[in-house]
Image 1 (tube, rainbow, N blue to C red):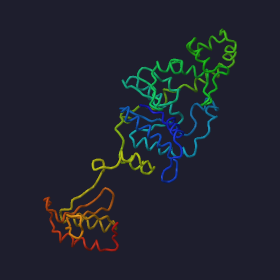
Image 2 (image 1 turned 180 degrees about the vertical axis):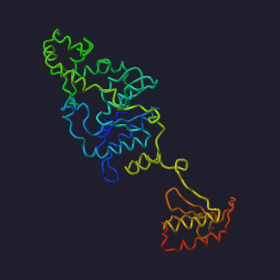
Image 3 (image 1 turned 90 degrees about the vertical axis):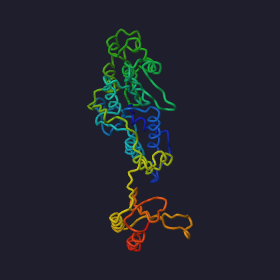
Image 4 (image 1 turned 30 degrees about the vertical axis):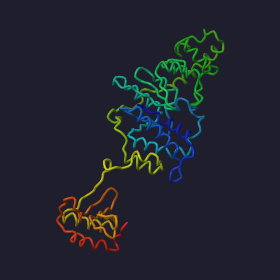
Length: 375
């Protein structure tokens, strides 16, 4: 599975507004992206997965045409702030993030998809961008996760776009793309571009026959703007030869990292997600020790003094403090770490090298020390 991370992040940003974290900063794009990604992982259960993102700085397309995407407004400041969190969310959920300087996310996806040709891997490209229709072939489909999701194989591309996947680039070259400021051929719109490619097959064939076309406006436009058509084709074509190598070991999906997710989503204030990743006995790297030897007991006392503070919990045989007998004492000086001293167990046989009185006598000085705080 190859995710067009940049487009999905923008979509999430515009779909959800007004969401902020505990620090007051916007978290709408992160939350929307995470929601989309979690559903993808649950529904599709990919064996391999990558999220590709654009990276700041010019690409080879700006070198070809300085006007490429020049009409776009800069990324909003409150979205810029969320980009690192989106990347971190991907990593926490077990999804590798790939960026490549000088190239767009499209080219990363195109190249990785191309490298699966001889690996018997079915590829799903997750995007809402029609440009990716050009990559569709046997074993490569496009999935738009909007609403309940829409799948595009070659037949669906033809039905939706009016051209085969191998013709998409040439259609876009003729009609242009206002979103990316790709000019195309003046005077040829979407309908005309599809008709020309449908009749003649390729852009090169159309340019070679430009003087024989029956429509005067097309003859003139294609004769005068042949180079612009070729430039537009270079701009809209997704590269499949970018300098990046598919590593199946690095992209194999092994599942989310619960502790990392819990920490990140807590920080961002995503309370509705926390229950899915809350630490449990099985998922937490805990250090819980039973104090049963004199060495253990002395080590505990030393740790309490060195730390300077501790949490204390008393275990009794009855809830009524006036009638209860002390069964054990638990100490903790750090999260997911604790010592337990058995002092009065009757139902369990827990042998110790010390009596309850000896243990309490050793603990008394540190318990009464004002320099060692109880929290």
